[in-house]
Amino acid sequence: MAAHALSFHSILCPTDFAGESRAAFSHAVALCGATGAHLTLAHVHPRELPMAAEFAYLSPAPLDALERAELSSRLEGLAAAARGRGVRTHSRLLEGEPACEIAGLAREIEADLLVVGFHPEARLRRFLMGSTAEELMRHASCPVLTVRHDAAQSPEEVAPIRKVLCAADLRASGAEVVPYAMALAESLGARLTLLHVLEQVPAFEPGSAVFSPVETQAFRQAMGDDARERLHAAVADANPELLAVREIVCAGSAHERILETAREEGSQLIVLGPRAPSPLERMLFGSTSRRVVRDAPCPVLVVRGAAATLGARPKRAAARQRVDA
Image 1 (cartoon, rainbow, N blue to C red):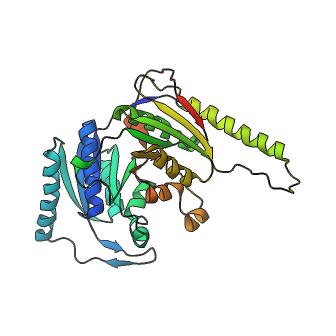
Image 2: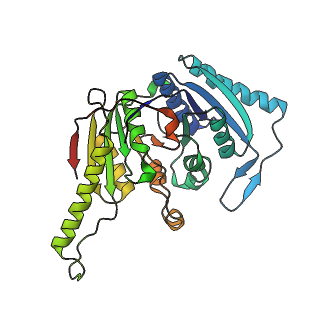
Image 3: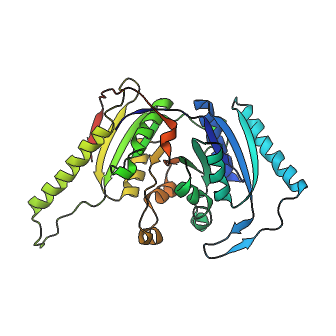
């Protein structure tokens, strides 16, 4: 797996002017300041207001001239604040279904990153995580950074990202996540922890006639060794002078081990891929990415369509710390 150089040119941040949006705005401005990217702020006046999965209430009439002027003024106020921190910024006021309009705008401006906010409280999860934020996580054409409502509320409060945790899916479907996390951590001057969770590791059950304890342990060891070998190969192109990488392979529930590791490491950013669960799993439990986003102690970046932000760089061998849990 080749390593690449990360380049941010355009970051899109939708806002509804609420607390979730203010936190996302602050992180978007901080990222633009750190990467030199251009910031687009967008507000979508919904033609429909989704209140539950089964039905929707129609909003009032489309925006009139006075309402449009008021919303444009609020957007421009945020844009002016970003420009005051040296970030090139402009704003867009749209009407329609929020997730659809934002996804379309991201494609139009060729955004490298979407920064969205959300509120994790249980009574709001279905309304917010089940609508705009989740739809963008699942269908956006670029990576999506989710920021909790209780994160830093001003760009000045956003600390530089120095510890990145990447949940590595070693299947073909997760191939772009590791190089993206490597490139991002290197560009931010951050340390990278690479975590792979073995979710379906068999356990010996007394009285079982299928596998003996020795056979079960041998199989578990073989699974771990294979994962460690593939995880190590995934970061073979890291430059040790520019990027410190720590590798961890452990067993358990994916979202639980990701959250546990993030807290232990003091991670400031979690990077993971848009792993799609089965319809039954999504209905009963929700996806790993959704549960991590909901409960993470820091912003979470879901990698989608990341190839456009990466450019080739020479291969180098890397020295790294390896940890087994």
